[in-house]
Length: 320
Image 1 (cartoon, helix red, strand yellow):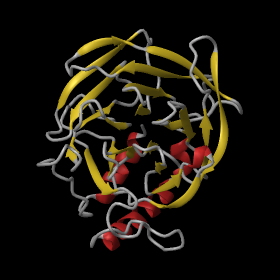
Image 2 (cartoon, helix red, strand yellow):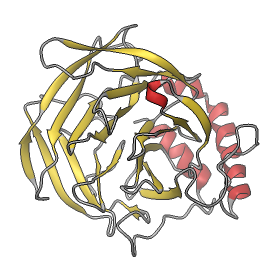
Image 3 (spheres, one colour):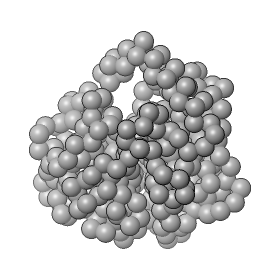
Image 4 (tube, one colour):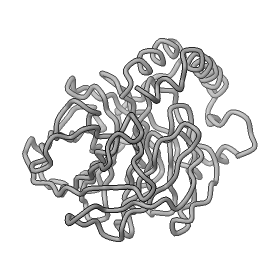
């Protein structure tokens, strides 16, 4: 979304030993590189249950009403879906799959944090056959109970189908709960129900609906869902990426896959909390990227990146 940030981070992290994973085996959950030249600003990620090994993504603003099905084994696009009936998207930032294999697309970005009095969610059935095609989508108008705001995270609860949004604020945002069922008549009011301790760029539910993972540019947090009364449990092992704006659980819930904007961007894999045989990062422990022998190097690179971002004016980025 912010190209200057991506360029800066890319320069800082060059040579930091953050290598893209290979999709040589497994069900596409070993990591991959997005090879489609049309996908230059992948800003959301969702693992398909209907087509194991397929990951849905989309560009940020400036592309059109499109979503892409990417094969996690090869990194190649196997289908581009054109959403019919949604007009011209403004700032698409998130994608999630509901309990009935319906894809929810969040046109919820607002870089000015209040420029637009409403945003949109698009819902489209996931196609049974993966090929380039046009599918009619349902469009919902969204407003927030406490006024307009910027957001990049939209999740659908896998058991109830209820939609949630997390706003993006530098000093931490809130989890917003939508109505029990979205309506096409009038605005759907989303209300804050819990604080989120992160400048959130994406989020994902575990397949069983028990955990909520939230990522930012340089870290992440996971919560027990607890019926929406979320409880912070620990830190996520988020990889260093040029402009990390995507996260999804693998279909079996054992992995978290992290995506980034940029041409030929890598989708990197980490064990989901409790899946690696090692304890997740403790809240009181410094770092938070532990999980393999490169942790210290990654932490050092993160410190350099954070310092440089501060030097160039992190707050200025939020206003662009």
